[in-house]
Length: 123
Image 1: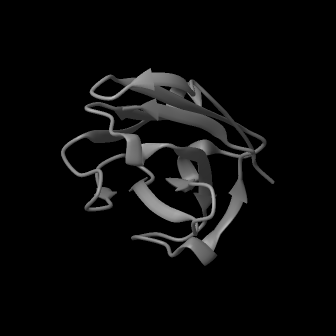
Image 2: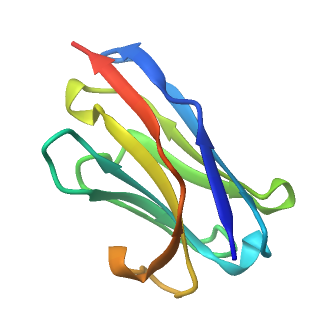
């Protein structure tokens, strides 16, 4: 059992930066692969980034590669998503998720999800 709570969303201008956080509790945080997903109005949920248990391996969607950085602090049971050079197309509800699978889990292999935090980017 894992509980996830996102924070850090808001309204920013295109080209700006935002840092999202995901606080985890209930189970050993370091035992899970962690990921960020987003969903824009009328669109399907899409993968953004993922990070391995130790933080040694990261994965990014092509749309955010070079602009977003995923990281984790296991001592603080917290996952982060640093978003730079934001674009209007980044506007979405961002959710963090935890998976028991190693490697790069599919969206269906994430067992726990946060409620999401809204990110709005004005052009």
